[in-house]
Structures are given as C-alpha cells and as structure tokens.
Length: 246
Image 1 (cartoon, rainbow, N blue to C red):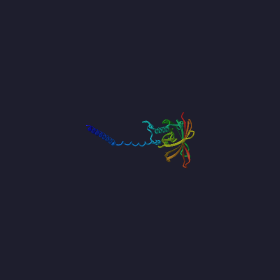
Image 2: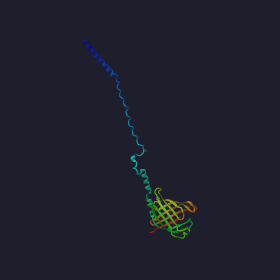
Image 3: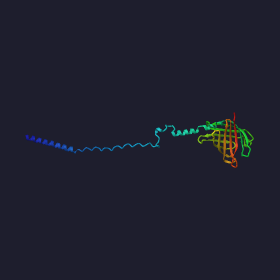
C-alpha cells in the first residue's frame, strides 16, 4: 500500500513539473510586442504670409452695396456734374441778356460805302443759364426787296467747361447753313474774340471769319465781323451796335 502512495506522489510531481514546463514554453511562443511606432516627422513650420498683391480684387467688404454706384462711377458722375454746371465764365455773358435795338452797317469790300439797317433783338437764357439764345429781326427797309423780306437771325452762345472756350452758332434767312465760331474772353471779361467758319453762297464752303463782341457798358454792346479782300488783307465788313431797351 505504501508503495502505491509513493508511486502516485511521484507521478503527480512529474505531472506538475511537466505542466510548468509546458506553460513556460507557451509563454515563450507569444509574439513579441510590436515596436513603438516611429515618431512622426515634425510638422512643417507655417509659411510666412505673402504681402497682398496690389492688383488683387477688392474684398467683398469694399464692394458697393447692391444698386449703389462704385467709387469709379461716383468719380465719373462728379466729373460730369462739374462739366455741366454753369460757372464764372457763363456769368460773363449775363450783361447781354435783355431786349435791344440795333443799327447794322455792312459792306462787301473796303472800297464800297457802308449800308445800314435797323432792327430789334433779344438775348435770353435757356437750359438753366447755360446757353444764351439770340434772336434778331430787321425793321422793314429798302433792302427787303433784294433780300426777299426783313433780315432774321437766330444764334446760340455759351461756354464749354470741357474745352474751356466760348462758342457761338448762328443761322439766318440769308442762307440755309450755320456759322460755327469758337473763342475766348480777354482778361476784363468784356471782349470776346471768335474764329468762325461757314459756307459762303458766293465763295464756297469753309470760309473763315473773325468776329469780336464788345460789352461797352450796361446798355451798349458792339459786334464786329472781319473778312479778307482779294489780296488777303483783313478788313471790317460788318458792325452791329446794340442799345438796351429801357
């Protein structure tokens, strides 16, 4: 009996030892722990912001609100308003306004005597004191038979803020065209000298003419026109003296 117990104890001890050895071998067969992941490369430093391009489009905040003009449009409108506004140059024409009587004398050449006629005229502003309308009509006279009736004329005088010059456009019943003149005022603002061009029924198109308008007082204005003779020498061929109607 004792022999059996000793044998059983020996078998149990061997089993424990073998079990422990198997456990050790199983532990040795486990896969090794994965190596720690390599450190990620350091993030690149933020790129330094580039200076704004001068030609870059405007930000939304700089854009005008819907339906509102842009800065460029506002500047254009301001320039147009300035060009359209009567100023000091227009005010120099004010002494011409009103009703007048006139005496006209004219001649075709320096050798001919002066011929005369009389009439009535009126200067009046239109378009907000921007342009002066000039209407003239001769009194009936002996020259009417040759002219087919009393002389009548219609003109427009103004100052162009863009060209910085005065202008005059004239037409009458002596022809079907217009005379267009452009000129300047002297330092006194009382003498206006124009260079004009018109189609002359006798000499042909593009005839040149110089005219001078003198404001000689509150109640007197003198208009003069100059031509050239056959030798190219300048002479006065027309004068209209205006007297204000009181």
